Amino acid sequence: MRIERARLFLVPLRLREPFVSSRGATQERPVVLLALDGEGVTGWSECVAGEASGYAPETSETAWSALTERLLPAVVGGAHADPAAVLAAALDTTSAGDDEPMARATLEMAAWDLQAKLDRVPLCEALGGTRRPVPAGVSLGLEDDDALLRRIERHVAEGYRRIKLKIEPGNDVERLARVRARFPDVPLTADANGAYTLADRARLRELDDLALDMLEQPLPADDLDGHAELQSVLRTPICLDESIRSAADAHRALELGSCRVVNVKPGRVGGHAEARRVHDVCGARGIPVWCGGMHESGIGRAHNVALATLRGFVLPGDLSASGRYWERDLVVPEWTLEGGALVPLDAPGIGVEPDLERIEGLAARGATIG
Ligand code: OSB
Ligand code: MG
Image (cartoon, rainbow, N blue to C red):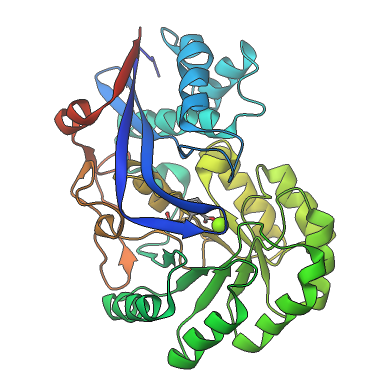
């Protein structure tokens, strides 16, 4: 594929409601969008880095710099065999890739969309995915019990197949027990975003009575040994999110017994190819995976939905309808729930059409390379 031009947009989106996790509240969601133009088509992607670091070291600003100053200048004007070659060309001439998987993923994923459009195939097909539709779950922030119970009721009625609840020390077992008592049969997950330590093990063991599908990222990202020790005393499967930044991380985690489920986010691990390798490492050991989310607009969501058609994505993802996040999404059509699932479109590439006029109108900043 020839990459003739790259356009970057910083679009200051705002979630419909604040989202509260153990890391605090967020509502502003500045998304960095990338459009790669070549051979008459445009490949789109979205960076998952947030306004602030915390979940990961990268932010929308560090990703903007990495892309405009290093990654994009290295590939614009060149001809590349495939998305892997695009990434290799960028990493060859810059050190931005190694410790900046989110910036790197932005480039790689736009190249996948561009390639799929040139080949006139849907992105899910280009990735080798065959599972359709893609079962959807919903990830809910911390809030008071009554509001939370009402919200769960609504999402269950809408058809979501799994409810994920954020927890933090002091705000965990009792509230989950109240939710479980009210919804005895709903698949429930808890996500701690790394807020606990091994000293909390007795507390976390109380979760074993609540029949959770899994406990996501109880300990800090770097603590694979701690997760292995915790998993050895927990019946509830541990799912890792922040800890898995590459297929090598997944391999290490599974060797150690740090988890029994993996949350795969292509934007967190450096792109689709690496996400597929994480999926393959897990599949080889019978470890189920699911596709996480980072409050993406419809562009990032399209990439996630495409990836989640791979055969190992057997659990519902954090892939909700556009209206769950935004007053209005950036794509046409917006993502809607059909029978508790999202359905990838048959059109080439990501399938949905970014609303360029709106994106340009909303953008706080733009950059063109080439
Ligand atoms: O930990 O999975 C997480 C959102 C932003 C950053 C990290 C996480 C999340 C979510 C929401 O849980 C997932 C979504 O619906 O996009
Ligand atoms: Mg998580």
